[in-house]
Length: 114
Length: 113
Image (tube, chains in turn purple, yellow):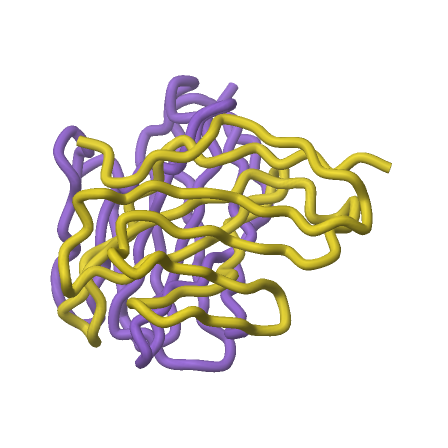
């Protein structure tokens, strides 16, 4: 199957700082990428849909000014958590959709905000 | 409203076939059935998907009933590494117009020696 990478795999930051997470499709181009968040013992929750060259579409309850998404190329989308707080600590996972409409997921980024 | 219903958990003996059921009684004619799994602390892994015909690949087989109201994912020879949460998801397919994936609770499969 297709490969999606995320960087970093984990990050610890102080409250109030910003953190950028990168999502790359390594062997295919992805017009659309998705960002999910998963809290312990819960299922994945979609945060936003990222379309190359246009603004992201955010799910209800997700603050677009706090979770900045940039999809500047067909292989890269970034999620920046601005002014992070302890309640933003979570497992952030991206996915990329290939031409056959199948989504492939990255390995996830564990964010811990102190 | 949940589009799929799966058992919360299942056990399977190593080397045996694991049969994971999924009910999707309100599935529409243009909705596909997708299966993903998530091993602890990793991103979900795509397994297989189908519309109405049974499908098989190197990982698993997908059996969809004729009325499409339910399906079964079959792992023919389960190993300890197949221990994971398995998600059955229905979504509209067909190119870039497809819906996003919505994850429910899934089935926690425990493969035991």
